Length: 493
Image (cartoon, rainbow, N blue to C red):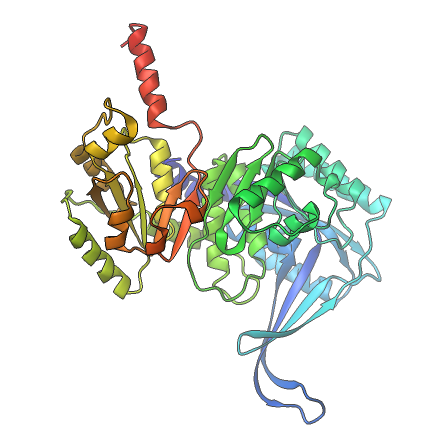
């Protein structure tokens, strides 16, 4: 996916997307105050209230994220006829969300979560809720609303399930059947141990806790274990893809046929993870609805989540923030390539690190630079402020790939890599592995492409952490070489 397509998506496509969100609607209320003493009435802290903030929660937070991305959003769910429902409707109006799909039930409590915070730390949470499934009449009302939305033109649907009663087995199955028949992508944020009601969904997005609960055992947050558990669930359920949010390890998508996409999380200070899963669901489904690739959708979803976790409380990411972040990822700069030796490169790294900037390193032959290389390097660059590429010399490539390689000499390969906006510097090494080079450079993050385990990566002892990024399927230098050779053999070239 080129920069042009992402720019077009962020600036032109997002404001025209029409997305429906169906699920358990909530209000999140935050009471901010200061704790300076213990109550004389009981051994509990006294919170002197400063102000109260109310925001959309649950499925409504997903809708809020989409609305702040400037999508056209249609929300359906169950609410009561109470003060919190009136507060909710006001918040929807402020966000520009169409709430015509909400079913209002008299004598029903609108789900509300009140969090008490002192000095930015959550002290206690108060839940006001009444769990009750939709009755047949309410389910029919929702189905009619969905049909109208589809006929008016929908680009995507999200089911946000919190087990509060809206997405019963019957309702969830009917929605997925209707949406899939219309050829519209659908994403589900699941709950519970049995996910059979989500059969047919394009994307099901559990976190690690939800994945473990459905798998029936504690799944380790390691790439191979996540993929193994996901493939076991694919045998049990009929999903196109499982998209697992893995906290500090990012997001991994596993398709039903075993393909894997992984996007590591960006390094940052985390204040509050409330609502981050809703943000991922909203940003990713918007990307898919806007016809971006899964890999690009993961990048945008991770970027959006990275913005949200730096905030306190439930926070919907804004399109302007994504545009600004994307601009920062794609700096406009160009300078002639100047070869640096190992010590010169190490000194540049030390200077960056002294400023508190994160330096990322990856290495490879990069013989005949292609799209797969570019996407891989862009993902690596997103992990920090600077990306250094270790480049195998011509002699090293010959030992690794055979006497016919490289096809492009090392100086030319270095110039091509250095011209990429995501690459800060290129340094050449003559060994078969970058072990000795890493012992001198000592960057912060070492990125490796493929199906490696972090503990098997050469040079891991010289960095703070190792990240594994999957290569883009269908792109390889060997494939290009074989294709050219075949064309020559047929006399076409």
